[in-house]
Every structure is written in C-alpha cells, then in structure tokens.
Image (cartoon, rainbow, N blue to C red; front, side, top):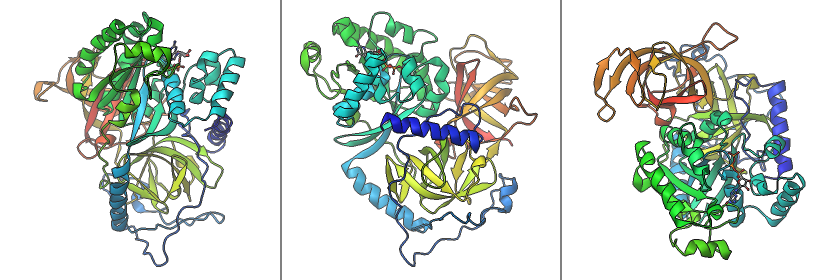
Length: 542
Ligand SMILES: Nc1nc2c(ncn2[C@@H]2O[C@H](COP(=O)(O)OP(=O)(O)OP(=O)(O)O)[C@@H](O)[C@H]2O)c(=O)[nH]1
C-alpha cells in the first residue's frame, strides 16, 4: 500500500478511536493494509432461503445476551444490511469445494517475521516484495529518494513496510505491517513484527495470527550474540512463536555481506541455534536455515552479482523463496464455530466499522450476524476483504478485514471475539491452565501478579492457585499444592483476572479450553516486561 494511504488509514483509525471507539490499553495496533472496499459483495440469488438463527442459549454465557434482547435490532435508517447468500450447510459445501480447487493451485498460509531489533526484518520483506514483483520501480525509487533525503538511506527497503512517520524517523518497526505475495505454489500473507522489546505485545498479536515464522538473525560480529543472549529478542521471539502454536520456522541468517560471506560464521550461528530450537519445541524437520543478504537481495529469489557469487562458493541449497514455497499449509478448521479475535478497529471510507483479525475457525459470510464477546452486541457483516479483494465468504486460517453494520462501535474492542450468536465463546475471570515456566529468575508463588496475553489482548491477572507440578513429558502430577514454581517447571495453576487500574471489578475475557478450540485456548503470561510462561486453558471456572 502506498505510504500516503497508510498514513491516511492510520489517521482515520486514530480519529475513529478518539471519537467513537473505546479501545483498551495496547490499542495502537496497525490496521491491515488497503481496507477500502472495492466492489459491493455478491448479492444472494433470488429465493435463497435465509436461515433463521435459533435462539440457542449457552448456559455458560449468563449475561444479558442470553435473553436475545438485541439480535433482531433494526438497522439504522441509512444502513444497507446485506443478506446471507447461503444457508449454513450450503456454505460449508461451497467452501469445501472451492478450497479444494484453489488449494490444488496455490495453498494459502501466513507467516510472521520475527527477530531481534535491527536484524533486518523489514529490509528483508521490502526487498522480497520487490524481487517477487510486488513492489514496483516507482515505489522503490520514491523510498530511495525520500529515505536518503531524511538521512536514512539504509532504511529504504524497510520503508516498504515501515509506513508511519514515527517508524521512519526512529528507523524501527513499532507495529505489525501486513503484505501479501505469491510463490509458485503458495499464496502468502506476511506479517512484519517489531523487534524492539517495548513492542512485544504487538509481536505477540502478529504471531498469534500466523501459521509459520521467519526468524531473521544478524550475522555481523557480536550482533547475533546480542540477539541470542538472555533478554535478547531472537530468543524470546522463538519461544513466544512456538508457545502460540507455530511449529514451522525458517531461520534467515542475514547481513552475511558484513562478514565477507564467511561460511564458518554461518555454520557457527546455525550450530548455536539448533539445540535451542529443539529445546524450545521446534522439530528439526520443520526447521530450515538459509543464508541471505537482505539489502542486496542475495539468495532471496536468486543468487546474483558479486555477493551471490561469493555465497555460491559454499552454498548451493534452496533460496528463501524455495523454502517458502515448500512450507506445509495448515489444516483449516472449517467445521468448528466461527472465532475471530479482533486485532484492529478503524473507520474505513465505506459505511460501517472496520475490524481486522484472523478467522481462527469456521467460516464467515457477507450478511451473517455476528456476536461480539464480551458484551451483548451483535453486528452484520457487510463486506469481507481478503488482501484488498471483496469476497462473499472466508474460511478458517484467513487474515481478513470485515466491515460491520448495525453495530454500536463502542462495543468493539481490540481483543473482542466475533462468533455466531448461536455458539457464543464463554467468558472467564478465572480458569485453570497447564503452563510451562520459562527461564525465570524469581520463582512464581501463589498470588503472583502477572499480565495475561490472549491473542491481541493483554489483561491484568494473578496466579491465584498453584494446583500441581507436572512431569514435562507425560503430564503426570508430580506434586500437588506446590509452594513455588521454579524455572523450567510444568504446572497446573489457577489464573484469576484482576480489575484494571480504574476499576474494582475484573473484566472477563472470552477464551475456550484448548480441548475445545486449540487456537482459542493458548495463553502467554508476562511479568514486568518479561515472558515468564506459556500454556493452554484447561477448565473455565467462572
Ligand atoms: N549490511 C547489511 N545491512 C543490512 C542488511 N539488511 C538490513 N540491513 C540494515 O540493518 C538496519 C536495520 O534494518 P531493518 O530492516 O529496519 O531491521 P528490522 O529488523 O526490521 O528492525 P526492527 O523492526 O525495528 O526491529 C538497516 O540499516 C538496514 O539497512 C544486509 O543484508 N546487509
């Protein structure tokens, strides 16, 4: 997306947040690009029955919505509320048959780009977009000219991704930027995450929306070590990504030009990373290494020029694009109920309020009424956009933008979950979880004050009860009611949300046991800016 459009979009988002939408702390997430609807979505065929949504009440959900007070609210006079094109069963048939055809051609997946600050993540993505024909010569020249004028010419490729004035001035990524490109067999959505420690919540939000990851490491002397030592972001991002369910990873060893394309340095870095990757839960068969030079575009799509020649003296393996093209596509959980955690909210140019996020499970279609949890509000999907295109429906695993009408925007928050009114996500202020404690220095005791991360949401919480320590591989109980949890322990605990600063009552969040919906049941726990544990939700207490 052109920078001007990105700036405009950010301004619109800020305006929307200031004027209408109450977003919680951490609500600075960037909008996904190009949100302007281009065409009106398909209207339903005449005579297509519109299924009535039976008022099935989930007893776990004992708030006002169970009374169905609002689901049949009339639309505002000037709003056109579309109708659903397909009855649910027909939609599932249509989705399955269309995906079967599409996936024969190109399988879709999304990737998050992670790594220590300044490793070259945005440069790598900017250059890759250019190599794959997704950045035109005009944009490239404009970025070169403008970054040079600003005295930041080394960031010219990164400007393809880092679109806001502040990001360009500071030379760092602050929020997730989303782009799309294709390799011969894969249609890839790429999320460029910030490396700076300060923006870890945004990195978590990005990684929670991805199937796979590219870890970019800086091969320059001492730079790899800085990112990999205790407190370095290469280390933390790897653990976070795995804890959020990412199992496939490509390690791009970047800036090898800085060490004269030294094979020994490349091997040294791979050798240091391999045991750590295994220890963090990445299977060696799902872990690939590739030497690259992001700035000169070496070994991204090809090995050309002087630098390419130097690399070719010792490397004849796949390029980054070859590795991307061979990634396993995720299995799409289409049959489970729709779950869309909102990662961003903004005002678009069309009517309605725009929200973006990842469809974790199920399907969604234009005209569908969705429930917003927490709260008792519903809205109707007017437009679905996937990579700049309006589409009539989307299936699990898609990163999308929805325009919602017939909705009060004040009820939409980053972290809220969109779901069917007939199958509502349960709310919790207290639940049990199985967690793995990371390499912490201060052990966890009962009542430990923490921040709980669930998709794009972070809320105050406490470890209210230490239930048991568990054997890491078998999950068997080792000790009940332990007094403390030390580093590297696996444990079952009770987590209870704490009231936010301005309140005396804890606000519930929407989550599900891991056994019910894997993607909805993963949590991360941080304390004083450090990630201390990751885990899965077992039982919702209330
Ligand atoms: N010599 C050399 N420099 C590079 C290469 N790739 C990136 N850089 C430089 O590294 C610096 C940081 O690049 P970015 O792409 O902004 O790094 P980043 O990882 O996206 O940074 P954050 O998102 O802020 O963490 C810039 O000055 C780039 O020009 C490379 O292959 N060789």
